[in-house]
Image (cartoon, rainbow, N blue to C red; front, side, top):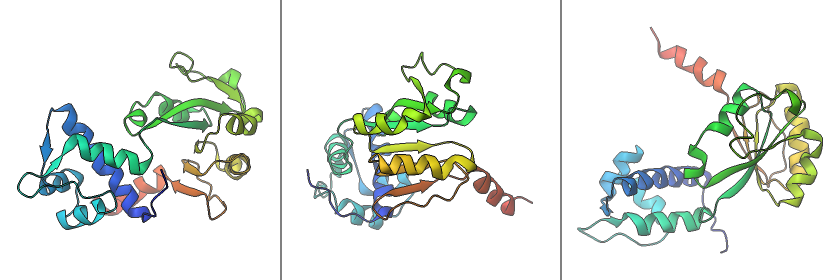
Length: 208
């Protein structure tokens, strides 16, 4: 399927709608109104309807959306019909926690391998979860061989750009960055930066 040109913020909101739809499916909800879905996602119903215009016309006046049909349509547009393989670099405390996190699969992603500068020192149930830990020197070959397009970077700031360069050169198209480093990548590569310390620090402004 050819990729639809969708604004980045809309892509983010579509992922929120998909998460809400999955919860509705788990609760055996067959149909949902635009108002209820918008409320569950924390957006206005007008914004929801505009975003879903990129997916297609699925709503029925007076009945709402078929939860199963809309979820399948969003999955198709977002490329989530099959699990997207992901590699993770940096298996410290944060990296190990990300491997244990079960929410990625619900969003259509699966960490298939992890990499670390000292894999022999990695502790935790990574192997038990079916996620092998390799030396970072094999990262580029692994990404290219398995056609991985998404990477998670959870290394110290000093190693962030070096690891990113390897990922980009090997064909990675999207990076979720937990490293404090500001990554320089080609325009075609998308980077979502998660700075936990900065997020927590910003909350301090609202605390009396």
